[in-house]
Length: 126
Image (cartoon, rainbow, N blue to C red; front, side, top):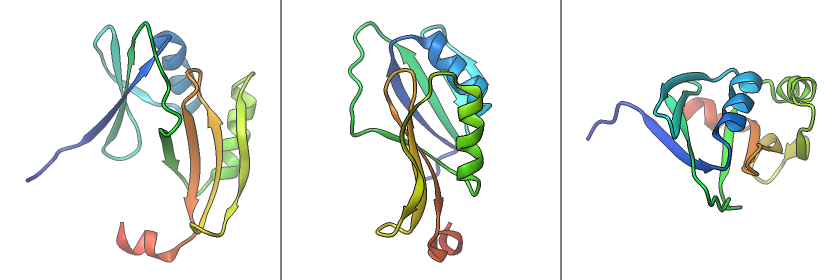
């Protein structure tokens, strides 16, 4: 079995606001606008799609994680770009999982994790 890529779709209340948030603050490239859904290219061969719906219930168990070596830099850039950014947790070392991470929320209330792996196994096995 061979897959070419992976897309995660999330329901959103306001597609325009969500699109603006990810395009302007994360630099995501719009790949396909289907009207009610938009698919964005994220790093490497991953994609994320947002679909506008009337009644959106945000699952608090969903976490969108972006991996970068520059966690602090990303947070500083977001603080400058997003006037009303909701920071859930400033970047800090998480000894249990051997990661350095922080959390924000997007306009729909989805939890976004910006993280760096501190474990050597990540680079060895990816």
